[in-house]
Structures are given as C-alpha cells and as structure tokens.
Length: 70
Image (tube, rainbow, N blue to C red):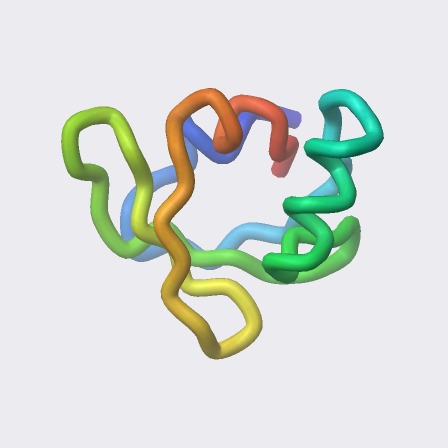
C-alpha cells in the first residue's frame, strides 16, 4: 500500500483504505473516495492532485491525497 500522492499519472488504482479523523473520512467518502473504489490521477498542480473518481474530476490537496491508501 502507498498513499495516492505517489500513484502514477494515468494509472487506475484501487483504494485500499481511507485514513484521517472521522470528519476527514466522511468528507472524502462524500467525494467518492471509498475502499474498493477506483481512482485515476489526471494531473498534479502545485502539489495538489486532479483525480478522476466515480466518473467525476475532483481536486484534492496533497494532505488529503496522503490519507488515501491505494
């Protein structure tokens, strides 16, 4: 397992675990980041990631990406 932050661009990966406090986990879950779901890193801008999750593009900070294990 590794944080989503280190996933290769364009590669679809499966989410294994979402960490952080309950509030952070709930927020990420609302965005579609749930264990067993797939996510693809589209690009990285200034340390932030643009990802494709559940047919939607979402921008997340590197701190949030570090809490998503793939």
